[in-house]
Length: 364
Image 1 (tube, rainbow, N blue to C red):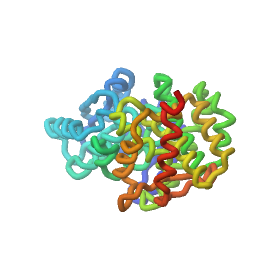
Image 2 (image 1 turned 60 degrees about the vertical axis):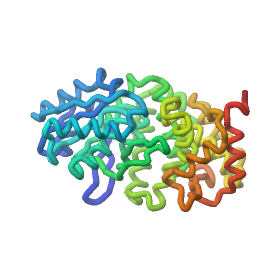
Image 3 (image 1 turned 90 degrees about the horizontal axis):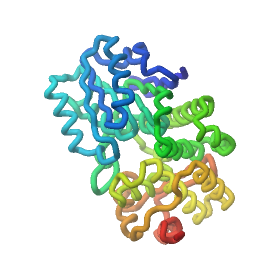
Image 4 (image 1 turned 180 degrees about the horizontal axis):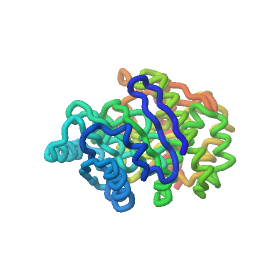
């Protein structure tokens, strides 16, 4: 097992990464409140790992309630927040309860938000079971649900008590879900870690084969990079925004297609390719660097083209992105591999050219 520390003063917490650790009650015990536990999971994960987590919590003599949501991005809704909090109230759960998020990014985001708002805040433990959740969404305390007008528009910064990532759960992860997580992994190399990006170029075959050593390095390096950034800017006042590389385009793709056609990582992969193209159009990176980025995304099997919609539709969603300020869209762009910059000074014509260049009908 490998453990990291997210340094946030009184809100600091550990990230535990290892094989078989879902069965270790000693990792859960320090993060639990004194009262009962609610496991929130989804219809894909419940048949695989719910009983294992139940068993671990029973060893700690905890009463356990299970809430199972439908799998998929559409479950990140205010209606499901009502469902979760209603179940907790009906069960008599008070402020001494703990919510455990067992699943991928959707489950982690909605559970974290439920923990933030239920009785003005209860304990939360993140137990990610997808690569994307392990390397990104379970770490850092961003929680929330979607609105028809934008992704993650309703939420809160709310840190978990612990992140417990059992890499054995990746064995059952469908190939499409696994590849989706790699978009966030590549992002860390691009924004902050040129050496890690080069390592990914050299070892992507081993990563795709899910070789244990390669997976361990991917998860540890990604979590370390994110933990370091979160510790320096917990509430995204500045630096932390670079973690959104590719997300302005990606969130617009998800919103335009109605949340479900693309997995989050797939939309982010297209967004990264677009952000690299926009960076090159603005003379921030060289064409050779753009080509390396494109080649690595392609090597993972992730998509690189957005669905064909009017450019105005994409721009409308970008204007309500959380990073927009004063009606201007802010982009995370690249000044080279390993260095990101936040800018709101992007000519609209350049944005439109990038969107046009990477829409499916342009390459039919």
